[in-house]
Length: 409
Image (cartoon, rainbow, N blue to C red):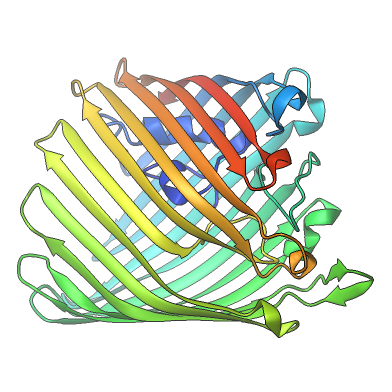
């Protein structure tokens, strides 16, 4: 399942899935939030309005593509209350989307997160976190090889507790448990409703200069309560997934940082064992900073996608992504993103006897942020995405342009 579409550093390009109508405008909010001059105090309120033009709203191919213009109104709140060594942090946004022609896509979206960051002494710390969100899912999603133009509102709730012991220059132990609930409004997507219980742990040796090397593991038990209809049979898509492997994080200098993770992952389904999947996976990141003005991040991955909105199967991604950020001044920054993914679909019971879907996704995005005054900022986004699939009927291209004005108090 794809991560929720709230404002996040690095935008949607490095998360591995093309943004839908809602996420395209939210990428603009991410650009503004990441602006070097956009610092939040202990309490902040923001409001924004924007306009987006999307020339292929439903992500259809050829002459079937259809564009529209939609508006965005957003309100946001940030609250950080320190109490001794503890912090209570609340972040929330509410968005209203209105389309000029496709009124059935009008919707409200939200993302709210509340967290308690705690510490006991200098070596023990953790976080209790709760997040809830609602988004309109992307029309590029595929279920059993089928793409639909039916709007789907996806809601999620996630509770997480994590704790760690250790400090720089010694062994570090961290553990976490989380509970995720996902629901979909469209009937054809309700087989992807899910309740997932997860647990993870890591043990690492940390150097005094910030280097870390260790091993990490995660277990997921996912229950999908709504069976999928496959040739007059109801199939339970519940599964268990286990992952374990080494990692290394290395700070070569003040300017260059490297990260590498590898793991053996296995997913076992409760029904139709022919769908079971196992593979070695890996991902790597490199970040280079040239002073205060420029940074470049490169990412390569060979792994199961963790950011899908369809949960009845899995998507394996082999891809590369680049992100560069250039600050012209304290008030103006430009972010460029590019990504190429080779994606293959596995383990959907409804597609076991058909030709496997394989696709190439290409994304390019430019985001310009300008802090006009202490309160007023402006953002511009240009976004291009395309898909070339083994099944040519799934091919599409889309161009998206957005402008947004934001007030922060």
